Image (cartoon, rainbow, N blue to C red):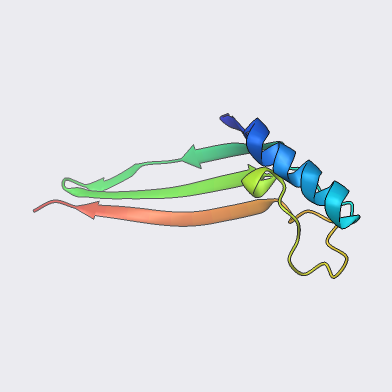
Length: 88
């Protein structure tokens, strides 16, 4: 489960923005990703691979653009998909 930390420079920008604007918005911290992939070999030369990803705190917890006050973070994200490979 990869966990990606936001740089101190970006965190300090968030803190400075909060101080100088007077609006207490979220300070980015980290992003965590869980990913599951399954490969199904349908027949020789044909592969189908469905996958699922779940992202906790996308982009480190950036502000929600739909929040008029700007204090809430965007929500976690679930991603479903499928890839296929055909070799002939």
